[in-house]
Image (cartoon, rainbow, N blue to C red):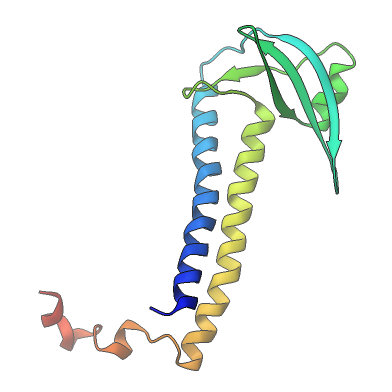
Length: 150
């Protein structure tokens, strides 16, 4: 294998690992919310953080430990009206809000779509240029080549 092939393989594995992490987090959180009651916690503080755009965090105390969680702008605005978001405990022991379920699913789906959009045209183009050969071109496809698979 050439260095560029190894680099592409490593980047692909890292990329899919990133998407897989958020997808597993989504499955863990969404499976934990069904039939589960919200936990009771003590509200500590809320913050607006940002760089290019703003994101919102809420600090709370649960089991005598302060934790920070990301919340939506709507939840941030409702805190000023003394309406606090429901927090849940996942099967893995993480505390999360409904916003984190949406965030995890959006990140996983978005990056998967980006991966498909980025990889599919390149693989088609490389096949057209003859750099990547299909299974039939190599002699592994078709009716006459069944003996190779037995």
